[in-house]
Image 1 (cartoon, helix red, strand yellow):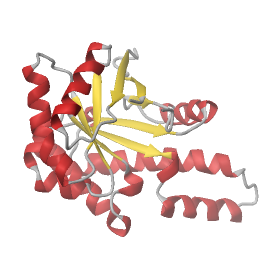
Image 2: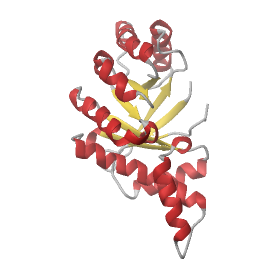
Image 3: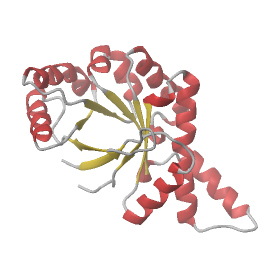
Image 4: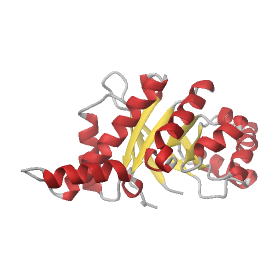
Length: 225
């Protein structure tokens, strides 16, 4: 169970909200519901579950019901990657049961990335759900990264590769947020994260993003668990 911390900026103040993620097979609704409850009782204010296949998507409504029947109102967030657009469309009960969707714009479908991203945002709108745009150091949009690396190589004043990586992460997150708003998702329904493995890289990339937007920021070290 990897614990992360989300900082949500409201009116210039940034209260801290603790989030954790389950490590059960989400298709096992009983075990996952028990872990969600245990995390909530331990102090987690949000709990994220992976929704990586049809079995997991089909199980989400049941596990959410089980958590609610035990008296817990903790929001349960769905973590989607390559096939999220397909799962959310095929299992509307899953889309409705989750409190929020986490999308990584770097792995939502290859060449049809923007189209698939738009599909998820449309579903979020249909079900009135917020979205976390979760850029990840290890699965960054390779087309964007290559474009920026090439531009840097041609520059008369090139910077080191770390700087290009951090800039690419920032650009990916903010471009995706802009695309989500173009589709119709309201500004206050978008959360951004840019997860990396090193603490100093984490600090630097979030300072960069925070200087360019006022979206709520979800903070967390990837691979921390």
